Image (cartoon, rainbow, N blue to C red; front, side):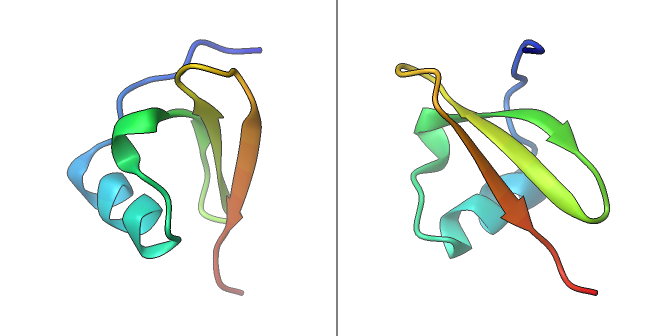
Length: 52
């Protein structure tokens, strides 16, 4: 597992639009197809898929 990074402003908006609290999630990987998040406290992973 990679180390999560703090989300950028654009990523925070996208996380919030999905109904998640951006304060609790770190970004592991961000590609045009998907963004992989890691929960700050539990370590659980979640993938946000993007268009196309």
